[in-house]
Length: 189
Image (cartoon, rainbow, N blue to C red; front, side):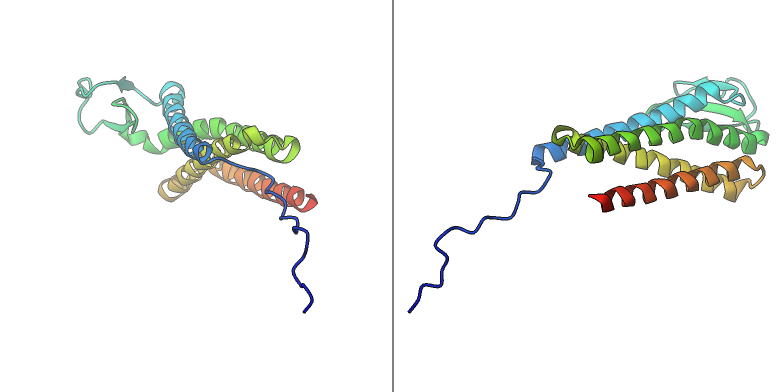
């Protein structure tokens, strides 16, 4: 009977392009959470500092500085005890300013993180930075989803100014072009 088994070892399949350690994945998840928390805190502080309708900021659990209960509305940070107060009758304007301030931060930050992801994963193919770039991209996606949620909430509650349409159209153009660009680059590989 002839021997049907091969005499030489069959070469195994090539190793995957990116070898990632389990510890690297765990640290990346922790890094993504830290980046998300940092982004949320930066967005709150940018609104606190740049929104012209904010009348007062309180960093502890104190009363509303003598204002009547019905005059001011408040918003607080999930990451600290800081509260901001703005006139209740100008809630729509306050939310529009807040949305524009957040968009001015989130859109450039998302594009920067996307470029970092593209550079590390598709251009340089640097294995050491591969897993880290996923944490930054996850943080950027979370923050842009936060902005989209804010814009949707604003449209539902206020539906007043054309600025919201500009932001939503800009987001649609950016996300569409980035998705097409990524698919094109993935197809070339």
